[in-house]
Image 1: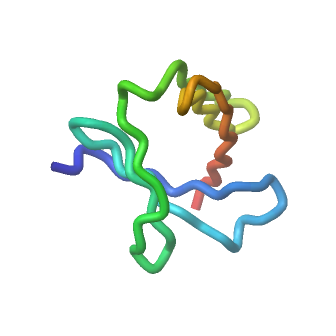
Image 2: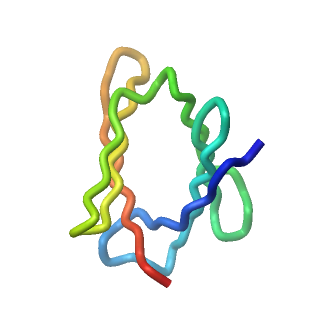
Length: 78
């Protein structure tokens, strides 16, 4: 069940490659603009989530295989 969807992009200077993040009951799903699922992040893997409204940056820390990686996602008001 999808609760909320947000439009984001991976690079500060690459807004033409839009993705959507679906917030679901068990985690986050990242889809391309064409609807193809590129990644699934379960809440058990997420260490931290922060959002900077000034810079419009969503930072997600995810633990996989004992390593913690940070992914920056940029939002843009349409």
